[in-house]
Every structure is written in structure tokens, then in C-alpha cells.
Image (cartoon, rainbow, N blue to C red; front, side, top):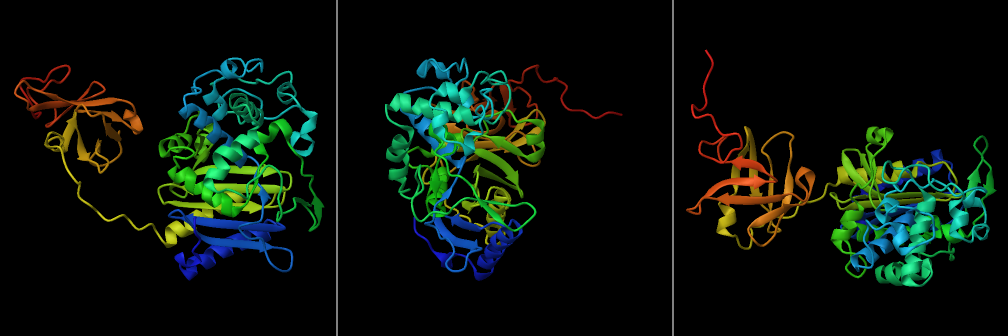
Length: 461
């Protein structure tokens, strides 16, 4: 991935710099570094520091905390794509003896396995991982607080279990597998389990005085798959591109799209906040757009990775203090600044290279009862169907190669769509998961369940 600082307009670059400058000053952070990615390239880097001289750049490592979970999730999805496991498998099937019961792999990825949020005392983020050498030490005597699958409950030990699953099925340590299967193929050579110079030191800033206290940097041991990694804005920019587009050397575009899709029932406060969780990725509605990615924190460090797939934009913010700058808000603001100042240029319209006449005749206006819909052919060879105006059920459909389609998203995801033809070959109606769409509202002679009143439409005197 190349870097081109000239890609953005001077006013946009200044607005980005002002945003992180305000965050560093108001958040009283020893340092803060950020990057913006657009179109698969890093187009802006910025940093602020309280130390005289050169500020941190895209090669300085910070600890990224729970962004590590997204890396672990990638390893699990690779195992699924290889056919080694199914996401609906109970963990016990592949990692027996953990006491994880019936929690499935998908539930652990989505934090719906019912596992406790933290490991038993002492506070695992500020103590050596050697205190928890075995999974039993990580899980404790009461690892499950909720029935599996019932609610979203963020769990660090849950991702420890997933890391142990990777180790069991690959026969190698989690970090070794991560480096071989993800970091090296993606060129993330500045991402590691242990800090590598140059790297920032972690600090606590006194809440009522402008003084600092160094934070310990512990090896998390068994808990590493939940939050161990150190990385840079340069590497996380590359990772953001991968999470947007996929890379067949690691995971397909379809699989990373699955990671970005909400998979957990949201709590009431999450519904109000517009947040959800996928498979190792957070989903957030903010500023009229959907952001996916993950946040991270460990004593001495805060991190945020935010991606707007629709805008083809991403931002990463890293800082070295335990609390202070609202890094999730800052990363979202960096995306918003660029999206609003320099909106994405739409791709040129291009005609379809070829068209199937039997599909083309289906294009146009259809009625579900009295609601008017439009069926359109799409560039990928499928079709879309949805209301001509206003809100309603709309979906894209993938062609199955036999004259039928399968819903890809929305209400009709997974539902079958087919054109029902009369004996003479003409189209009678569309059947969408048993719903009948006709060319006219309750078309006379059409196969409408319940029939059509033979007296037709009428007024009332």
C-alpha cells in the first residue's frame, strides 16, 4: 500500500490535523498518532506529542488491545473456510475439556456465548500472564453468566478460548499461526506480540493534575488472543484495506463481509446507540454512515480502527494513555471530515456487457398487493427488487444459473425468487418466498392467493 499525502486537499488535511491536535490537547495524551485510508491507500498521516522534537510516525508501535480480537477472528474464519470447523459447532467438539458447554464458535466470536467479561482476580491486564497458565485459570469457577446465545455480553476469556482453539487445530502457538497466516501475507511486519523499537511507552495521566505514571506492560499469556498485539498506524491502515476488500491469500471478500455483519442480539442501550457486533468486529451507526472495525484499550494505551465501506474510507487513532482522548469518536470524525469535504467520486456508469432476454423482460414495475416495486438488473449479473419510493423491503439477489435467484441481504436474505411462467412461456408472476408479485395490483387472472374479486376495482358512493 502506497502513501500519497497529496491526495487530500490542503483544507481537508488541516481539518484532520486540527481534530487530532484538539484530541491530544483536550485528552491530555502524551502522544497521539492517526492515519486516514482512502481507495486502498494511506492518504494522510498525523501526530501530536508532548515531547519536543519529532512526533511519532506510521512506524511507531502502540499497543492495540482488543483490536487483537479481530485478528483472532480472522484465524477462526480461515479454519471455517478450509472446512476444518463449522461456526455452529460447539467449542467442545474441537477443544474438549474446557467446560465451555454448548457455546458455539459463532457465539464466542459474537460475544453471545454467555462467558464472563473478565478473568478472575487479580486484574489480568496489569498482572503477568504466568498467573493464568491454563484455560481453567482464565475461566475461573464460574465462567458462564448467561445462557449461551441469549444476549450480547462482551467477553475477553471468550476470545482466549478461540485462541486456544486455533492452537489446538493448527498445532502451533497462536502468535506463530497469526504471523504465518495473516501478518506475513498482508505485509504487517510491524505488528507483533511483544514491543519492537521504535515503540511508545504506556502512561497513566493523573485525573486532577498534569503529571504521569508509567503503566506496566505485561505479557498476557493465555489471554493474548484477546488483547496482546502491538502495531502501528501503517500496519493497521493495511489491515483496514484487507477488512474492506478481503485478500484471497488470507480471507475472501465474502468472508470479511460476514465478519462485518451484525451477529449478536443488541442490548437496549446498544439499540439506542446504534451499535452492534459481528464476528470479531464492532458495527456502529454514526454521522449517517455505518462504521465497522474495533476499539482497544490496555493500561497505558487506547486504539480505534473505523471503516466506512460505502465511502471506501478508514481511520486509525492510537494513543499512549490509559484514559483521555475519545479515540472512537476521533476516528469516526476523521472519516466524516474526509467523506464530507471530499465525497467519493462515483464510478462511471457502464452498460452491461451482455443481457439475458428472459431476465430483461422481468425488469420494471411489479406489485406486491398494492405496493409498487421495481426489479432492476445489476452489474454483477443478479437483480434487485424493492419499493420504487419510500421505505420497505428491498434486497439484492444472486443468480443461481437455473433461472432462479437467492436473496443476498435485507428481509429477503436467503429467500428464493423465481419467475412463474404460463404454459405459453409468458410470465405470470414473481414468486418470492411465497409472496406473489404481479404486473398490475391484484392483477385479474393472476395466481394471487385468496383470489381476486371478479367485480374488480370500484368506488364507494
